[in-house]
Image (cartoon, rainbow, N blue to C red):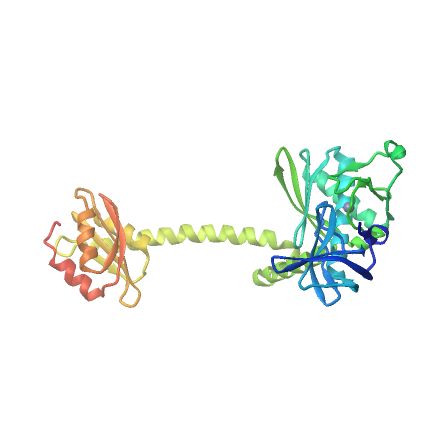
Length: 382
Ligand SMILES: [Zn+2]
C-alpha cells in the first residue's frame, strides 16, 4: 500500500519514491509508487499532475484501492517526483475556501452541502434548501472575515471511540478512516482532500451566481487566484463600458438602462418614419405597373410596401435592394392567392421564397432591369 505523504504534509512539492509497478494501458502507463505526495482524484478535488522521473504525470486516480499515477511514458526503480505545484496549490485554495463558505452557510441555514465540484476555474456547491440572496451575502462576508483573520486549518483522524464527540459536517468518504478538517470559527468537516494551513492563503471567496436546484440551491464560487482573474476580467469589461458610454464606472448599469430607453424611442421613431415613407411610395402603385422598387434591402420594408399596395392594385409587388446584393421581395393581394404568382416569379428571376395565400416573401438575384422587364410582362390584374 502506498504511503500517503499528502495526508501528513500537503505542502510537499517533490519527493523520491520506488516504483512498485508500471503497467501499459491504452498508450499510458499506470504507475504505483512506494509513497506519494500526488493527491488522487476524490471528494470533488481533481487528481494531481507533475512528473515521475522523465515521465509526465497526466492524472492521479484511485483504481482498485491503489493510488495510480497515469504517466506519459514507462518509469522504474527509484524516481524523483515533482508536483505541478501551481495546479495543486490552486486546488488547495479552492477546496479550503469551499470548506469555510460551506461551514458558514451551514451554520446560518442548517442546510447541508449535498454537492461539490471543482472545475477549470470555479467551484460549484449545492445546498439542500433554498437560500436568500441576503443570507448568501452574509455568508460571503463572514467567510472573508475568517480569511482576514487567517484562521488555522488543521486535519486530524480522531480515534474511533471519540468520533461521536465531534459535531462535524460529512461529505462522501473516499476511504474508510474518518479524517476531520477543522477551520477555527468556521467549520468541522470530514474530508480526504488537501488544504492550505491557514485561511489567509485562500485569498478571497466570492459568490458569483446562485440558482434553484433540486429543491435547494446551486452556488457558483470564485476562490483565490480565480477570484482575482474574475475581478480583472470584469473590471476590464466595466472600464470599457464606462469609457464607451462616458459614464463613471460605478454608474454603468444606469447608463445602459438609459441607452436601452433611447434605443426604444428610436425604434418607435424609425417605425413611424418607415410607415410614412411606405405610404408615400405606395402612391406609385397602379394596375399598369403594380410594383415599387426601393434601395434599402429591407425585407420588412418590402412587406409593408406590398401590404400598402393592396389598397390600390389587385396584386402588389415590392422589391427592396440593389443589383449588387440582390433584392428582397414581397407580393400581396386581398383577393388572389399569390403563392402561384410567387412560384412563377422565383422561376423567372432566380429567386426563392413563399408564404401564405395573401402574402409571400423571398429574395431574387436578378437585376433591377430584369425585375422591371418581368413585372411589365405580366398581364394587369395578375
Ligand atoms: Zn476538504
